[in-house]
Length: 142
Image (cartoon, rainbow, N blue to C red; front, side, top):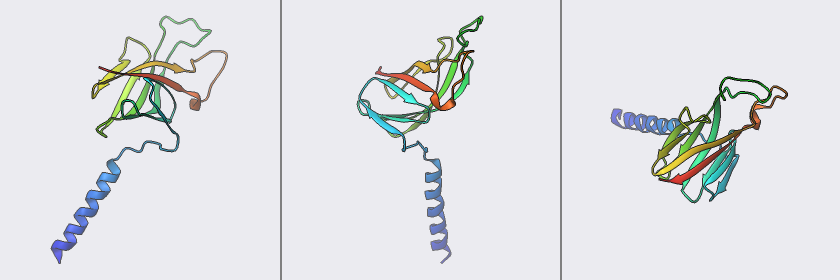
């Protein structure tokens, strides 16, 4: 009796750990593409049929780019976080930057992911909502 109760408890705990460990990619705002270049909105998910991966634009970590209309001593940088589910169904967090001074690309399972652009660009004359962010990512086999 004790052994069967323990077995049920252990199996239940194992299932809960698996569910809790799964990545919660937003499936509500997903689109598919076969292009190497993907333009993804913040919190949007893109499934790339050509290379068999899913990429979500998770968040903007920091946007310190020099605003249009300002004079800055350097161009600044925007760092963004992506969640990647590769062809083997493994989850990876990618932190990519707009400035070449920082990491703006990475290679995982033979595919190179490069951040091409993040819009909108800050401006001293206008503000934009966080929900307006869009990132362009290029995926190429290495």
